[in-house]
Image (cartoon, rainbow, N blue to C red; front, side):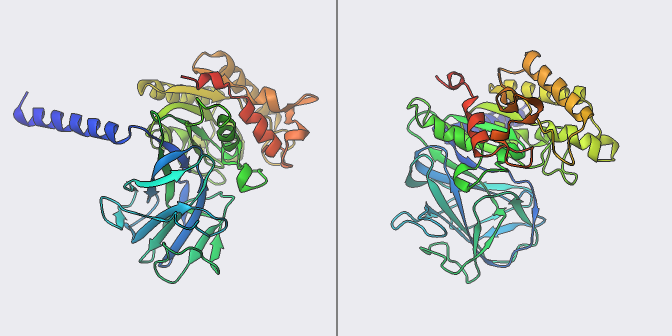
Length: 401
């Protein structure tokens, strides 16, 4: 081995060791996968409220410029405990640094992790994250479905303001992809890679935002599990095999699996709950690549399982919920594919565990439909009771040390 090759090998090992040490004790408090290019933005301050899944004593955030076409300048960033709406609780505001500096420039397609700050965060704690954009942004990076508004203030850097009393609001989540917390034990994170059902479409409010949120609340009843973080990587309209092609959204699960699941700090488990959009897209879209078979979906899920195991991560799968009664998506062929995929998930032995959402939420009188008690009204997405029922299907023994 040459001296240069040896030096390269040692440098790579040092980087790996440093990254591992930097993540020790950290877990995902909140996460939301960037899913599309958003609108242009003027110079302004954004304030966004998110809710952590678990407790911690220190906080850091990740900002994404995944869909940007030019470097993203963030002039300042703050985090604090939310006091409702755009208010920050007195005494809790913390300025964030990036490599010791108050601002950061993020290359197109990249992300940036802030330095940690001391901030005691309770489980299920709403946090206010404020970002100052000192210059216009041509193409933003967003997560397109949110239940809490983003507050927009036009007058300069207001990241440290206690309130935005007359701010405009928006329904996109901009740039913020992760809030990570340092907990009292070894970091443990469960990542959920899903579609609109993980994303919480059909939920009644931001406090009941979907089944991963209901699961986070459920974990708080068990002290041994209360410090597990949940990374909700649901994207409404997402597919396993193919990237965005309207009305389907976001990079495929195969293309985003590392970034949105395996690279999360402390990740021990991944639960995949996707496939229904691959099935419906086969019938709605004309492009040959979008017309996929159940066998191709199964092969994609096998690849996800192989990648998780190669990283020492347990992988679970959830069965697909029925969607009979939907106007655009359901057909007898689609139902046959759903049943075939569910049977494979249950019996193939590919996954470390199976969470049978279908068995729990289907209508006892018509297995092609959601139980009316759990139906949000569109016959595709559960309501709050349905999301709580989904959270109950996760066997907590799988999470115990």
